[in-house]
Length: 389
Image (cartoon, rainbow, N blue to C red):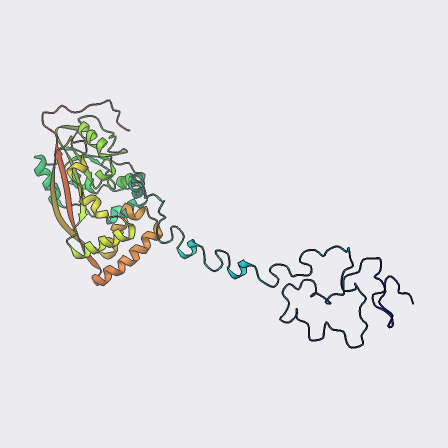
């Protein structure tokens, strides 16, 4: 009996015929390998049950070549009979996950730049940015900043040898007019110079009868030899002294004087020293030292002026909230953003209320005064200059 070319199994017990001429088809799914797509067979799926690959006793034996490809048949593609890499042994990256899977990137362990502290490459606010930051807080500045004690003006009168009454005074960097008003109250003929829009507007609201001219100490909008006294209350550190000192000499009359002063914190008072340290830690800047350490050399690097230094101690008692509004009006707070400032002021309020349960603090200041006189016989410095309108 002849076997047809398409037959796959022998009939009866005849010897196995020669393999057919056409290629032997793949064995049925599951005979030699798991179903397609089974990349990771279950435990035991690659180990057939005992006897599963051994035919039953008496079962017909397959034809020669039925389970082996005939001679000359194309080799099966790589991996067809052997599982692909990763089927039985997972690839390396499944045992050692790539960077970021088990170990988060560095920025997830350290807060993003700006969350807790500014990034290292972020520059500090410029002097100009700090100087102009007051414009947005002019009303807060006017309402909460400390004034200056009468003893300060007594010291100025003593050092200049003349009372302010009747003197022509230029108050530079006048801000909201705190010092200007005190000079005016002593009889001085005052003109104010202020660069900031917000501060000048607040000045005009508070002191409508006193002229304020827009300008800076580095380029005074005043004529030569036109004033007897030039004052900078809490403002000289915003100038370039190498330019501001010659400008002051230019506008001063012979025998005139330049007076610079700052309210500085009295750091011998324990609670004030502790508060200053907290500010320095939070903002990474010693605000008090900026003014407290002013000396003649720093005030006038040109050496044109001969300063005399005086200090005047005074204090004021204010509610805690006024004190916080006062320190919050300083440039270091204004340029670091509302959230950064608010978080500090909230914590500072808690500190102060624990120390002062009645809700009041005694702010103690030392006014640092530097005053230089021009020689009475000196010819004034002159240069072509057109006053600002």
